[in-house]
Image (cartoon, rainbow, N blue to C red; front, side, top):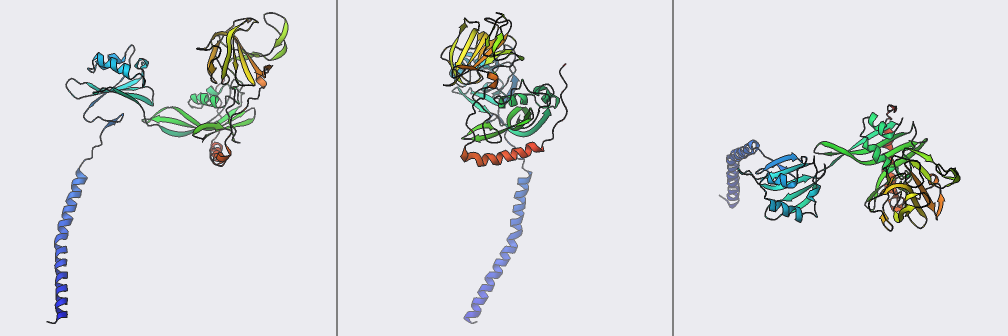
Length: 426
């Protein structure tokens, strides 16, 4: 046999051996693979039960609601926690949550061992539908806050007003709390106690869901409110990590001042240079607006500022608060029943903060607020004041704002108007 033939013979022999090996081992390999797959398919995968971040497969979870006259000590002693530990918990975790604020009706969970005499390992108190606080009762007492996952579903609403925005929401089966959100957004541009029959609105907003349950209204994302035939737009836009509402031109809806300092029934007297005084029965200037309201109605600062004084006005104003907002504007609130908490000269106040309550002190014939507005220390008609706006959308953010605004406008335009008017108030 020549050398070439020997090489060919050896190569052929090796090929035959490899072929036999493949044919012999293939069914075995296949059999083992199928067998392993069958085991995997038949094996039940059990997901661990996670509650408030804890794997509770080897623990018991007791869910309950705080009852009347029930305190933390009552609850934890029922799960074999001694009073000394409870006292230590209350003292050492006060900076996280003050257990004295535990309220009737709120939910709580106690995670215990599965022993014959179960002992609490963790106590979870639900501050709200979203927020909760966890207390660890292990070797060292530790507390921390947490939040449940919140899902945001986008919804729409529309309606025509007959008597009030609130009633319109109720009649159209919309959460009336949306009316409060809109009144906050438009507080600087629309006086909601002066809205007219026939005014109408369209809104895109969020409903918040926790564990599959709707817990209330989230943010209003876009709105159109037609008042006196004019569309007032509001678009939620985030710039510099802060969300704010702007009109369709990118101007802020927030102004330096609220349109009104309280929820009032009616305007009983307007700004005048010659008004017949109801008590003195003489004509003299009335450089303010009288808002008729029930005694005790909260009165709010219409803008940020510093209290110049909170004192009795001997000229007939009774209990009076005056606030300096900046170098140009100041406001005064007369005939107050009493002052708000902590209100005194030199105190800083925030817009919307309660600075007093409607009363009838001084020269007054009944409960009302005499509200006065000063520009450069000169009294001006509060109902005619054009409140200066805050910063608009920045030029660098305008392109993105326009994109988002146009998307919301398209959605608002697609909302069909709910033409069913609410039942009139009788």
